[in-house]
Amino acid sequence: MNNQETIASPVKKPNLFKRFGIWREKKRVQIDKWSRKKPFRRKMYLNRSLYAMMTPYLLLFFAFTVAPVVMSFMLGFTYFNMLEAPKWVGWDNYINLFLNDPIFITSVKNTLIIAVITGPLGYILAFVFAWLINELPGKLRAVITLVFYAPSIAGGAVTIWALIFASDIYGYANAYLLNWGLISEPLTWLQNANYILPIVIVVQLWMSLGVNFLSLIAGLKGIDKNQYEAAAVDGIKNRWQELWYITLPNMRSILIFAAVIQISGALGVGAITTALAGFPSVAYAGHTIVNHLQDYGSIRYEMGYASAIATILFLVAILLNQVIRKAIRKVGS
Image 1 (cartoon, rainbow, N blue to C red):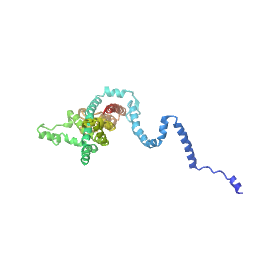
Image 2: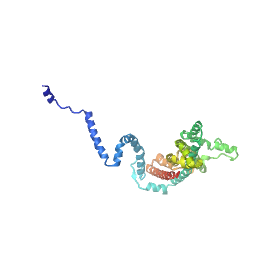
Image 3: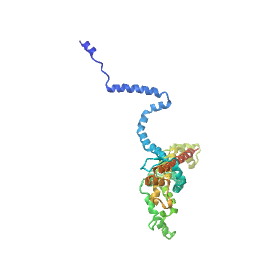
Image 4: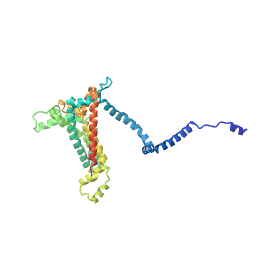
């Protein structure tokens, strides 16, 4: 009787989880065989857990960085006023920028002047200060580092310069110059086209030391001190040779990072000119490419024209970035 009941009883099927496990194992074997056919596929398969962890960041990066850049590039060939659908105009925006927009040419000139002066000079100053301060004792080094980094984290730091260059007798610059007898009446610093650009350059230099300075300090702290002792044995005779053959080659990645930040800061000057000289500045003396972009993008809402300006700024930044990378690779050679 028991044998008959055993034979008659139905065979139990695996539950859902077991069936899923069997299916997953078959797929794993299939994908493993497929990945062995190409080196790139194999690399992707072996590092699949790492790529899975990177996926959220990559999705956000493409959604909020790559996609807007591509859309801006495409909109640069259209007329788009935010109220109507974009209309294709080809190269008209770029032709108008260079041939029919004198204010854009002025903004390019001002931006290049600021970038050529504050870019290399700010980069060198940041490294020199970082190099010197790195030699100080621990507590003093921490205090001086905070002093140099403070302007970059102080949101209203630019207002200090607005007070220094105020156009009345209460402005610090006018007050000292009057007391010293160098001027007979207050100068209208930020209402005079001759003074605006030099003041912007000074303020940009002061503001640009922050992040670069901190990153270079970190790079200097990461160098193995034993390399200096070995170099002394190999014939390094002074600090300049240590700097060129040991310090700078060990900091190439940090130097490139600092250079990228410096390029972005120099080409992205706009908020400083607006805070100091207003928008627009007198005779467009402090007008930069970013100010021109804000004018057409945030005020006039001519998004096609603004996208063309943004594309030019983006291409210039990439070009300068490549040039500086090639120059830094030669350090220590």
